[in-house]
Structure formats: structure tokens, C-alpha cells
Length: 125
Length: 184
Image 1 (cartoon, each protein chain N blue to C red):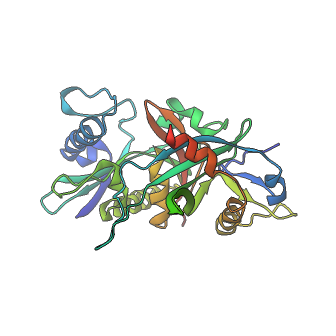
Image 2 (tube, each protein chain N blue to C red):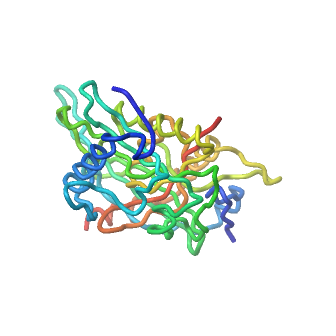
């Protein structure tokens, strides 16, 4: 069970985290970001955000930005920037790995996590 | 631009300008449903002990504001949005101050948008000013309720911050609680 620390972090090992199920909370398109375009470019970029949580309280909360890329006529979402979360990964001795390493490990996890279908489905509604 | 801070009493007439500026930003531009008679936006957390951080342009016009409250007394998050704390009891510590009513919208500058306000130089200077001011009052951390988009901007500007729990939709706006490190 996740335990909330007084500083707002939920501390756990990456192995414990990988055993949890993350469920979709919100996704949306950025409505107030300039559409990316360059001189002579014909393309525009759609960007947005997606939020995921673990079950129960306290909940692990992770959110990240994405943008749409098109390849072979098919829209695909790719994660951009760095995710925000209330997670602090710890080592086997319970020592904090720090925000930078936690974020880097979350990005690695995101590369294995299938979030695109649910997000695309939500923003398409 | 210069940044000043103090209580309503010590800011004298500037406090009224801040309340009018808040009305312009939060009620007129962002459409928040706030009690704001006479074109002044203020609530029960605007008390004699509340500390304001104010950015003024070269003409003396308010172009940014922030409100600091010690968590040892009632504050916005503890009284109105405790559900954003992920089941935790709202902090009550002289080392944690709440930052609220943060705005950095220069109405004398073209192409301003309230939702992009945190990407401006004013916003970054104002937030740093609020952190410095809170530090002088003994804070080691700020807690704040913000629109979700602020998280991205805090990170891009290099502030050390993390969310305190999942975002929630309130009155159509996605908001979340975050903790910002004040440091030494």
C-alpha cells in the first residue's frame, strides 16, 4: 500500500511501482498554446496533456504532455517534456533517489506503458 | 519593473490597486466565479496578517501579484480545497506558507493571455520574489493551488516543485496542489 509522506511524496521502489495498475484520469488538448509552425512549413502541431492515477487513496499521480505526429497517414501520440508526479523512488534501503532520477525512471517507464490509445480515444470524443 | 511586498496596511494605496488588478485578471479575464463587489477582488483570506508580493511596471502600474499566508492559520487550500491533498491533513507549520492569487499579466503589454502568464519574465521574477519573501518569514516550502498548466511552466522555469496529489476538475478548470521548495 502506498504511504503518503508529509512532504506530499509517495515513496516506493520502482519495482513496487511497476506492479501497480495506473488508470486514466483526464486527457485534453492544449487550447492556449501557440500552434507550432515555421517559415515555409505547412505542418502544425497539436499538443495536449494526459493524467493517470493509481487506485485508492493516497493515489499516485502522474501527468505528461504529448504531441501528435503523423506517420503513414496515421496519427500517433508521443510524450514530450518531463512528467510531473507525486512519486519519489527509493532504493532498497529506503533512501530517496532524488527528483531527477525519479523523473528519468518515470520516462523510461512511460516508454513501456500503453497510454496512447486511451488518450487518443478521450480527445477524439 | 520592481517588486515590493508587505501587508495591506504597509502597502497603503497599493493594496487597493492589487484588489482591482485581481478583479481584472481573475474575474474579468479568467471568468472565475468570485465575490468581487465594487471591482475589487478580495476574500476571507485577505487579512491583516496576509503578505502580498506585487510587481509594478515603470509607470507604477500593477503588473503582477501574489498572496502569501502562513499555514498556521486558515488558508485557501485548508478551507476550500483540502480534497486536492490526496487524503493528507492540510499542513500547519510556520515553515510552510501558502501561495495563492498568483497573477502576472501586464495589461500594458500586447499579446498577453492569462493562461500563458507563467511563461513571462514578470511571472518568473514575481515567483522568485514570493519565494524570497516567504523565506524571510521562515518558510522552507510553499504550497499552492494552481491551474494544471502551471506545473509545466514551473518546471520549464527551473523551480523545484512537485504535485501533492492528482488534479481535479473544479468549475470546469483542472487544478492541482503543488509544493515548491523555498531552499535556504
